[in-house]
Each structure stands twice: as structure tokens, then as C-alpha cells.
Image 1 (cartoon, rainbow, N blue to C red):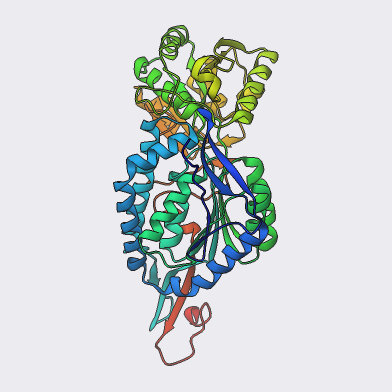
Image 2 (image 1 turned 90 degrees about the vertical axis):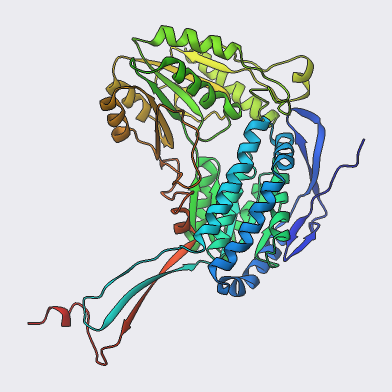
Length: 499
């Protein structure tokens, strides 16, 4: 057996062990006997050292011109491009999604990095005419300070890049805590940024539990921005703590995303969409299609087509090129998914396919679960309302587009949504009335592009949008400047309106 690699924390430009002396294992969810790496089980003391390093580095980093900061991100992105296949394979081993998807995950980081590089020569602000003569009115974007980034396990490189690249480009310093299930991909990203020339202290990496490391980050008074992707329950806790300290907070939380299919739709295309949306990444996306809303006119035919395609999915080793679906992330998550399946059956939904773990052969080495479909689901059922985060699809039958939209909107989340139709009026009505931050027409609920805003409404978040130009609102503050060259005292709102 080859020696298992130990990963260290990265604090103030040095790779160091946790002061706690504790470690934890990162294991392959497809082959649980395989240890991907050993990581530091950090303490509050480690977090405080990382935040102190970030605070110390901030004054110098923020004075480096944004185009120069962008050059470092460009160099890092080029290194990621060169190492794309290596990084994708590492990610598949630690997260379990297939190689096509992990290559896409790395590509998201590449796209985000190049966008951030370009933003170094934009970061546009506004000027406007003053209401008084001989006076300029200008605005500037300024960095906020130390950013605490807490990232999930389902996109181990893409989501850290969404947070770290824009935060650094804007002139902030960062302490990142990756998910304990997938810390290796983030570690490699930090190493690449170090290789690209990022100064010491600007980016710090600390691994460990949310209850210890995460709590220390969100409670520390020197962390001025907290950016988090994860569950609504944890997001609510972060908002509560951050509110006491008046920190800026960006929360990207859960989803219960619907796909509507109308009679005019291309049914084969719509089946492709729901297969990818519901079972891509084994359903472990916040944008995953968890609810399929079918018009009664095409309901039976669509179900027949969908079942045929689900039975053709290849589930297995995600490192094999022809695998469609790998395992879920860990044993606890598989048990959670199965618990929801049992609730669905108990509440009266009809289990059409799946509904149990896969066993035998390779399946006994990891946390595999069958693609699962429920029909006869009503909007009040638990499986219709709560985020399952696994390969479980709930199907609804409706009589009209109005009813479809009512069902789609009848949950506490509002991240992504989809409608398949060739009727322009139906498409535009859905775009207008679906309560979601993202709506796709004739495409699945997954597939966001990095140069556009990403986020949702209701319990999906707190109003911020990652991606594109909007993420820079999270990591900058506005400064308004008035330059009066009149040579006299001018009183706004008073002198302006004197007779």
C-alpha cells in the first residue's frame, strides 16, 4: 500500500500542522476502504492564527492595483488548465461524481478565474452629475477586509473558486474552510494560487468541522464577510451570529427545483433534461431536479419513456468513462436519503423504481443508491417539500400550466426552475411567474454559467448572487466622494432650491 498523503493547513504562507495535533481521514465514497488523504482537525486556535495572518496581509494586498491582482489569478487559472485532468481525477476520488462532471467542476473554476482576471480591469463604479455647480460626485468600490469562506462538498473546486477568486480580485484577504468530505480539491487550489505568486497571508486554508472551525470563523470579530454555501439550517445559524457582529453575509442555500413539461414539449428532450437534472451528480446539487410536474395529456407516455431511460443508466465506478452515476457522498447521507424514501412510502406516494441502496460487488465498497422515482405525489408530502439531496424524484400530475406553476411555487425554496414547451406564451408566463432565481426554458434545472448571477429567493438565500458581475457586490463596499471646486460653502438640498 502506498503511503497516504497528509495535507496541512496553510496559514501566513506556510503549510503547518494543526496546533490541536488531531487529524481526520478523507475517504473515497465509491471505495470506502481507500483513504484519499489525511487532513488537519483544526481548533479555534488555528482559525485565530489564520484570521490574524489575513488581517495582517490586508493593508498591503488591498493597495496592489486590481489589474495586478488579476494577473496572479490569471497565472493560477492557467495552471489549473494544465492540471485539469489530474484535478478532476482527485475530485472524483474524494467526491464520487463521474469524470465528465469533475472535469466540468474544474472547468467552472477555470471560467471563474479568467472572468476574475478580466474584472481586474473593470470593477466599474458610477459617477453622476452633482445637483450643485462646480462639484463632482463619484463612487468607488473598496474591499471589505477579511473574508471567511465556508464551502460545501458537492462542488469541491467550482464553489471555492466562486468565492475565493472574486474576493481576492476585489482586494480582500480570505480564510477558507472546505467541507470535511472534500478538502483535497481546495488544498490543491490553494497550492496553485501559492505557485502563481499570491503573497503570504492573503489566502489561508484551515480544515476541520463546522462546529469547531466554522463557528470560530463566523464568531471572530475581524472577519467582516462570511460567504457560505450549504443547508438552510446552517445558513440561518450563520445569519444569526453574523447579525450580532453586523458582518456582511452571503448565503446560497437549498433548493427544491421543479421541471414542468407541457403537451407541446419535445418529450425526448424533456426526458434528457430530467435524467440529467435529477440524477446527474447523483442528485447532490442545490439545483437538482427534485420535482417533475407533468401535464396530464402527456403524463403516461412521459413516465414510460423516463422509466426506460432510467433503467439504462450505468451506476458504478465514477472513474470509468462510461459511468452515468456514482455514489452519494457518505454513509450518513445515504441513510438520510433512504429515510426520506421511507417517509414518502408511509405518506402514500407510490414508489415506481429504486428506493433502496445498491448492493453486491463494487456497490458493497461504497455508498451507492438506486435512482428513485415516486408518483402519486401530492404537494403537501414531505418528499415534495424538503430538500433530499440525492437521486430521488417526485412526480406530479397537473391539468394546466396555472396548476403547474402553483405546484412549482408551493415550497419554501426558490433556486432553479425549468419548463419544457414549444409554446411561446407558456414559456413567457413561466418565466414571469415561477418564483426562482433561475428559470430555464427547454433545458434542465442544472447548467448555470459562471458569468451570470447565481442564487435564489425565499429560503434559498439572503438575496445575494454569486457568479458574474453580481458576486463583486458581496466582496466590495461603496465609497461616495464629493469634490467641490467652487471655492465656497455649498449646502446640498438647501442652496440647490433657493429662489
